Length: 86
Image (cartoon, rainbow, N blue to C red; front, side):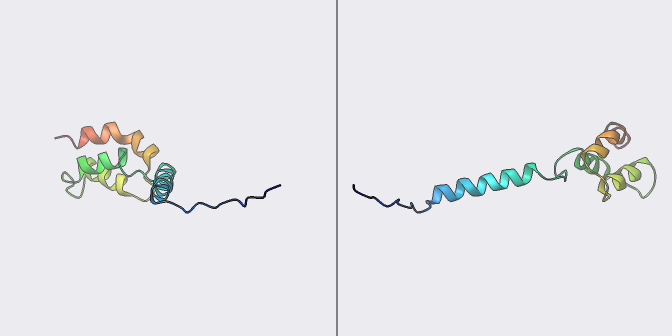
């Protein structure tokens, strides 16, 4: 009987790229942060309108607060975008 040792193939460049992409995508989808969601839409709409007081300021500060996330921002998004529209 002939014994042939198992050959270990070297990792090729494309395999490394695929593995890195999979880790990156998995890491992004698992984040609790809201990089391009409702909080960012509120911030973008209200930033220039924020004069330091009023509903525009309240929405802007809320969306930038530590406790803000997609869930909490989505509850106030419609009203904040309306307040900051003009």
